[in-house]
Image (cartoon, rainbow, N blue to C red; front, side):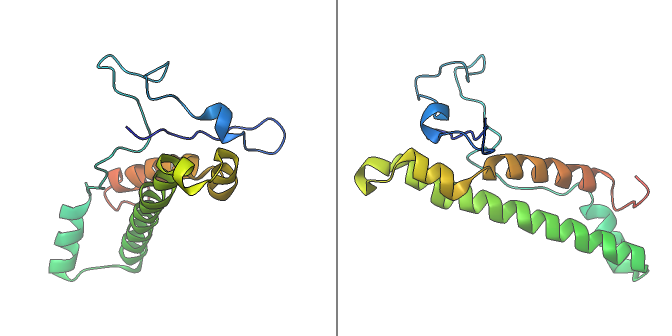
Length: 139
């Protein structure tokens, strides 16, 4: 299983990845099943709660300017979250797994990716809240 990096800082806003890298033996970061909790699941994909309302609006052709803005905001946030996840899964996890072979230090990985996992978690939560509003801008 992939080791996760967590970036919390004392002075710079980021901690050393070396100190925050959790061991794969479980440690404190396991749930009752022995699996490690993570903001990022291995089979991540966003599903849309508002897709039915969006389809209805598009089929009826009664989109207001506010509807268009809400749809664009939701689509943009979904794309951003998907892109962050792709960076984490495709690049950061690879570097962490292959760091010895590539001769890359955890500090270098930490410097390169900063707090991307926290940004991902925040934006994933934001997307879920926007989607749960069902394209209602007042919610």
